[in-house]
Length: 176
Image: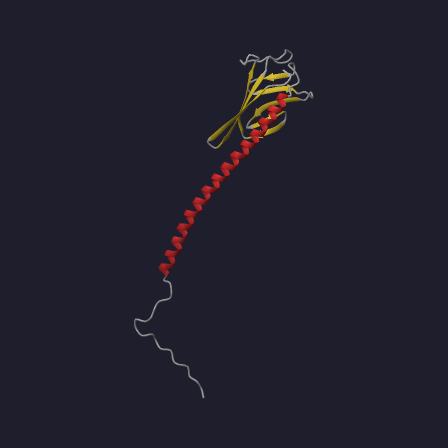
């Protein structure tokens, strides 16, 4: 006894449902996915660029803030009124209480302490000097004369893209 399977017959008209995807439907789906992916990638790129900008700016600002604190601390330790050798708007050179010669100036976009880079990304450095009566001094006395400087205002500017920020501090040297 052999068992014959039931022969397959065609579906009656009207009962056949298509289960395949046409080429046009496939192309439309791929196009829509491509458009959505492009839009999402532009948004993600802008977000990453913004994050990089903010991170860079905060890192540079932190580096400049640290440099400004160090400058203030070292200038506060100025040896005496004969230890100031250069006092211009862009440069300050002096001896500290340990007889170390310290020279601050801007070289390109680097804030220099002697031959070492103290901070990078600096767009401006400005020293303003004041006498005992709190008057600004345009040409302070320097060694070999006794200096007339009693207070120093330090301004550091940083530039990141189109934005800039200026940080300032005032220093009263202890031994003047």
